[in-house]
Length: 273
Length: 247
Image (cartoon, rainbow over all chains, first blue to last red; front, side, top):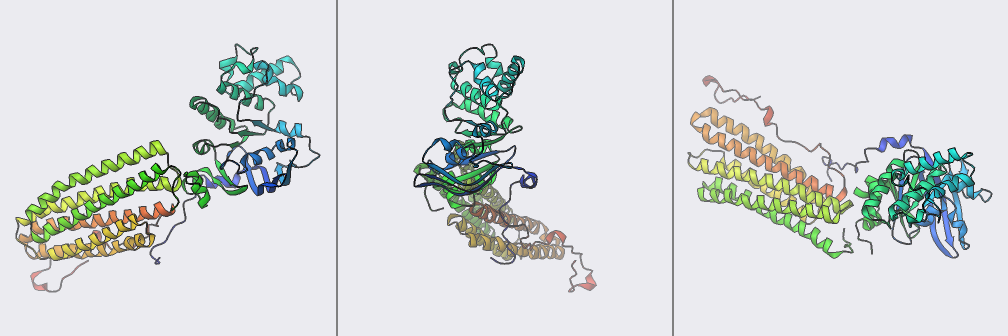
């Protein structure tokens, strides 16, 4: 290459300047996870920024769901699972064995792949969390929380006349929004979503995606998804996992237009063998 | 990227796009070459053939646009695949413009063949050949995904620009010498300008090849040799003849 020709670095994303005033909500360092002898997650170092949607992508078995479950200690329920390293939610060390995981899970809520409402009324599905955490003291307060949560989840208009009916009677998309409403009823700081749309049709998926974008104003969201398009649509940052390694993390726009690592490129373009 | 897609028809479509561009590029190369020949040989028939051939180039542009549109809609390409599809679209537009410019040259060739021959035709032909060489190079760089070659041809546009500037001066001199030359020289001036524009589009293609491969951009400080926009020539007084002033 001669002097006259100068290659310019690949353009950084336009919102790069915002990076300076981004606050880290969850900071992970040297996170390793073992299922018995299987080393499922290797030295993961990842920051999740406040009021942003962080998407975790990668092929099956890459460790993305394992990492997601580390953030609210869901791996505790698996006997053979061992987690090392440090994960901090603001200043709280999530991995601290003294930590009350019930309190932690009130701060870090979760929505699962399949909608899993309690076999109770729509009202009780939402009211359950606030009741056990003692958030509401009167019936009126509880009513207000239920209404506000359903409104935030975009479900209020569809169900306000049948709050006493079972949550399981709703459609799949409505059930998933009910689960999101249930998660936000206890006012968490972070919402973890593990493939929240994989059991939903495209319209219900679009509603959830719209909802995710709205929720980001008040919450920090981490989403695991197998749909690359979904990651591209809803997230600000994307992290790519492969065989237990965090390969690349960056602005979603950069990951999908000009990924740095050839493995990321291979995966998102559908070349992965 | 050497690795192939899991879905092999995706690869077929991407390869199809690349060969469509190569084919269109071949047509434009032939178009330019014929237009220059028509000027050099004062060949009216070849010029007419050239003008007719432009329709096929336009048709190819439509075809490539439809192909890219379909791929964007159905495959939703990302990363390098996306850049490749976008690049094909861009290059097809550049090639279409080049085809138009070459056609304009052919039209002027028709007009020139009715007029008495003027001197700088050789210069025009040389400039045409040089531009044709740059175009061939840049198209090869595209088909072979050869970055070095793309950048070398990117630089060579300077030569075309310099040639254009000197032709511009030369043509002005001819016009000042004898007003009977003005019609032919004015035509040749446009011919030179059209060829110069073809060179510019060739550099666009080189930049696109670079973008497709790296995701980055070649910076804008490419050496520019065209200073004709600033050239001023004053007719010389009879007593000063022989000492041409310029600028």
